[in-house]
Length: 509
Image (cartoon, rainbow, N blue to C red):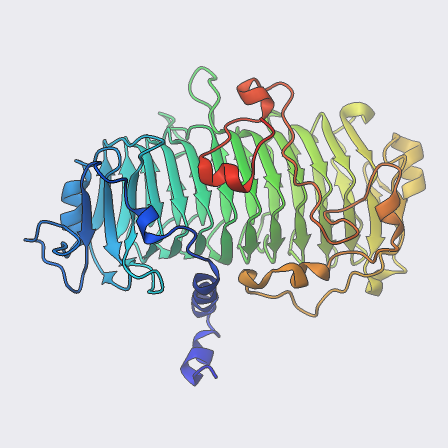
């Protein structure tokens, strides 16, 4: 049984998130062995750090490790391909900063900042410290716990590329958990747990600021399989950038896939400013959009954004989905919205070229979709194959699709030509819990099964294909990465990512 102190701890927001992450630490497997964390034999030096048994006067070998983060930082600038700084599992550091500057690994021999020691011991805990990467390439940061930075993000990168951040626990950071800033390109952020962020975001792919001179982030980012248990001052995952002077695109080719986001004050996932060619696929978002923003916020007011959004489950968010502008697809998503008086899907006037296809939208009677009255061309967007329904407590509510007034589905079709094959009706089999499970590490197949319609539901056999994010057998739909037709990079698919990404989410080419 948990102790009384542990139960009391969970009553506070920070304590609850810490408790959740403790469960996450137990559930995230160590996918690679200790040997895999170390570089290949014969490469540049590997340095070892142990706060309990080390001494900074030692040579930094495994048998004679250093003691402090500061001593490791002194050696970081000399690392060569295949080199590493490894922290002892079970050890803890309470001060210092590890600055990795001006070093370059290779794809085959990256530079590793990671862990060593028995794999059943806790991750090395770098507390009150930060890891800052600058002007570097082919760096892996993995298998660590980072917390309580006193300024900036717990892990930050500037002017760097080909970075992999994998299997870390990041929490209680002063500003951002994991943040990629000026000119950072080709990153993979994979299977981390990030929570309790005092300012800004959990995972941030973001310009340094919005003033001159601009310092936009670079392109080609994967954010996949992360767990975001809550308590962010702003967003759980934020991809927002402006272009370089002269119009050269920044923040292009971003893939946000299979993340679990809970309890963000603003958005669970936001794609904003001039970020474009972004895939948002197979994410689960709950209890986000609490204050002044939407749980899933996409696009920008300039109509530059291109977004493909599919296979996502949004359930019990305070605010739902907003597509502010740009073309692309909102397809095969399930949106279940119990918040009274709030329409869950909002389409702004600049969403010219958007397709809204095959979604399942259930509400507590507030209506389903609102399209800005300023979108005055009927052919500006395409809508079809959607299923609209009410949760049981709202079965007697009037149908409501909103554009230049409220309409039922028949009038919507007749007035605007949208949703020719869409349907309205009950959705048997969906069993909403009294409250959503607050621990996203427990969002397994049993959790998701509550949001899968019964096999006899007609929405599985629609002429345009099944509606929603789940198939008849509970399989996730909409998980295919579709190319952007106007994008030349890799046939429209963008960067395929490092090996760890290609193994989890392979591209067709």
